[in-house]
Amino acid sequence: MFFGRKKHPPIKSLIAQGTVITGRVVFADGLRIDGEITGDVVAAEGQGSILVVSETGKVSGEIRADLIVINGVVNGPVFAADLLELQPKAKVEGDVSYKALEMHQGATISGQLQPMPMAVVAEKTPLKLASSNG
Image (tube, rainbow, N blue to C red; front, side, top):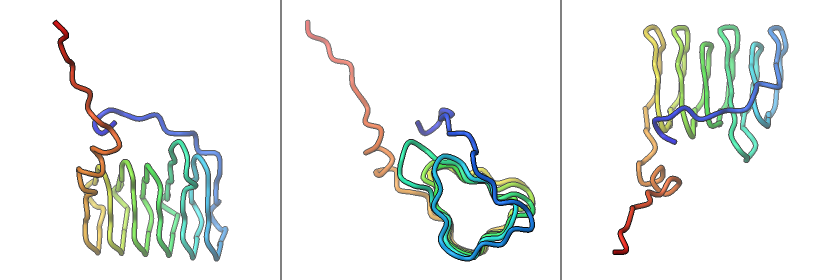
């Protein structure tokens, strides 16, 4: 669903402010980062995922999920398979790939913006044409 709102899973995990993690983080469903992660943050394959980097959150590494909301700092590439929302205090230093992008005034990106090719999107949601038999 490109223009419609897709139901995303609830955020079940939190990396709290003051917490520092070094290494790759793989999560299922939803994850909110208020602390700091040095390493990649990647959603497990499945039915959908949401990743939130709050105003106090910082990630140094690649992030990859279906829906990504950033209001903190990300140093590394960002891959949003569905929607990338950059809130006013978002600071991204790295290339950004997305299906849909929502960018608020004040957010900054130092890198290339790369929308996912529509051919990839079309393969996932084929159109069915009505036919008449008579």
